Image (cartoon, rainbow, N blue to C red; front, side):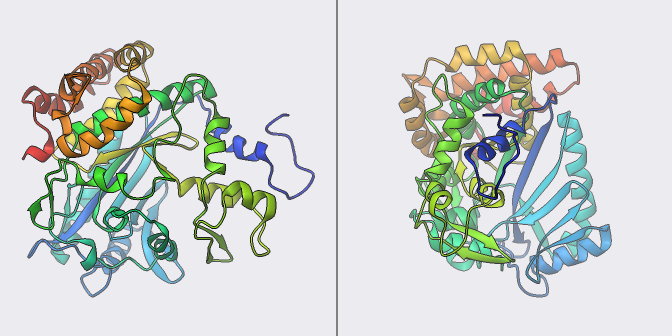
Length: 419
């Protein structure tokens, strides 16, 4: 069947589900970045509420007026801002997420982010707010963080069943990177490698040791929270085996329970009563599946690496001090250079799925001091960061400099959580 053939009726077809990923194939090599930070009051370090005269809603309202941004609304509530291809959105616990238009260079990302940060600074100062580069709120815990008034977050909070799902939703902040793919085979190759890299990179950027004012005993409490959020939609999307295809990813999504659908600006809770496959076959209370339902369902799936019309690499704690740009630089160096891809695959390709999966649990606690097959994670990290560094040197954009902060930490056998 031709994936792009026209449909003779309105029934959602399997080919349309595949088509969403096939449309992502493109001849570009851009880098995207979503950068979450935790807003706290400078006076006491507590997380800033959405509500009140000096809350995040009012901050967004004032910044929109000062810097010519448009509102993003949920019903009548301001939940974010947009300007052309850049967005500022609030996560469930008021985490401040900045997503800028994908760029061909890390320097381009940095310039966009720094420009917005500069414009935002006077209003942050006026409100007495600081945006923390931490993976978890160091002082305020979820019991004292109200959800922002966004319908989907209330439904999600009631559905997600893991013992740390409230921590994940309300307390944590991370950095996500998006990379392009040219074809299905290119996407699967990068997807597989990103999954192999993920626990190592989580360890390198671990930055969420302190929570509720105390040392948790974990280098990345944020990673621990994701491990205890919802095993049906978190973790690894597939076993990233050789021969995997878009169909494998689609089938995994089809078998995942649904949380909700949207109809006429209203959130309709499904609360895991059926999978998307069952919804396609039988509908639900008079509702039939459509392509927007599929896109939403795919967006409510939270694996370490997520396939969209790009590859989204997700499990990095929020970091600062230049390390925030080390993350996209690492992936640009490896994913957009054939020799670097080959080298990194040789370095990591011998590990089994179960070893990589187990490592996720170890790095949450010990970070780069974890071991795999008796080898320190820090030693493996040094090797592929150097692969990326050499690749960026050859690319000629002077972007290897963005890896220097993480290389310096690794030389000292340290990670952000050690400071």
